[in-house]
Every structure is written in C-alpha cells, then in structure tokens.
Length: 198
Image 1: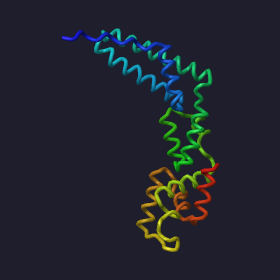
Image 2 (image 1 turned 90 degrees about the vertical axis):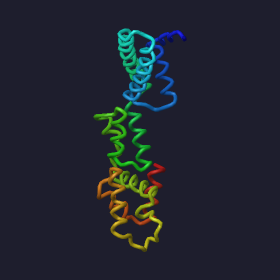
Image 3 (image 1 turned 120 degrees about the horizontal axis):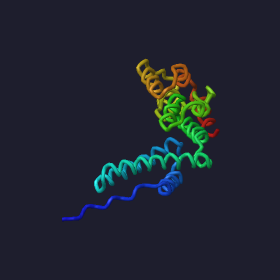
Image 4 (image 1 turned 135 degrees about the vertical axis):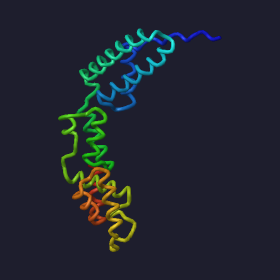
C-alpha cells in the first residue's frame, strides 16, 4: 500500500509573480487575462492539495493565494509591465487586419477583460477600415469581388444572400457587407492591401 501523497506547497506571492512573468514572456495579456491565468494555477493547486490535505486548510491557503495573485497583477500594472490600453490597441489592429468587424473586435476584447473607455479607444473608427476588414473576410471566403466566377457574370440571389449572411455573422452591418460585395475586384484588392500595409 502506497503512503498518501504529501500536499503540494501553496502558491505564494513569489511563485505567482514568477508564473505571471513566465506567462507574459510568452503571451500578450490584459490584467484580467493574467488574473485568470493565475486563478487557474491556484485552482489546480487546490485540486491537488485537496487530495492530500485538510479541506479547511486548503480553502484558507487558496484564499490567501488569490489575494496574493491580485497583488501581483496590481504590481505589474503599476510597473507598466501590463498595459491594457496598449494590449487592446495592438490586438484590435491585428484583428482588423485579419478581417474582424468592429463588433467582433469589441467582443474579443471584452472577453479578455477590456472594457469601458479603453475598449472604445481601441476600436477602429475609420469606416474605410471596417470596409477593408469586410473585404479581407470576403477574400478569404472567396465572396463578392473575390468570387472565382468572372466579374461579368452576375451572381444569383441565393449566392448573394449566402455572402451577406457570412458577413453578417462576422458582425458587419448590411451597408458595409453590400458595399464590400459590390466593389470591383481591382478596387477591393487595393483597399485590402492598404489595410494590410497600414
């Protein structure tokens, strides 16, 4: 019979700080995102410690670790290591170039803990950027000006509805979707290239 495993040591501020820096070295993160990473680490420790330790003690140590994690995140924010505004602006620009709509970008950033004024400032304001993002998606999905049929062949109503539905599900307004689908291929390609370079 094997003896019961000894309880792993609870994560303290130093261990959580190291874990936070290791995560930030590999991934860009918002303050809320980093807090979730540390919370998952604490939850994993609690599950492992609950097998070998006393439930009440594990719960107390888990609460202390969560408090330490909040302090670690606050220190990193104060030191400028985590900058939600810079994270949001960079991520929004990348998502726009990848063909995501304003609504899609807002949902993505909100899921990563970006809210309020920081979220509003990160979203692209230029209507041309929204149209270019719709064209990036159209190019990837071979819709509208990027459809494989010759430009002189008109698409039937069902193809047009399908293309509009794809763009609508991606969060683009009907006006933007219709403008993207009606654009001439050369003009559409030029706008996409301008977005990707800019």
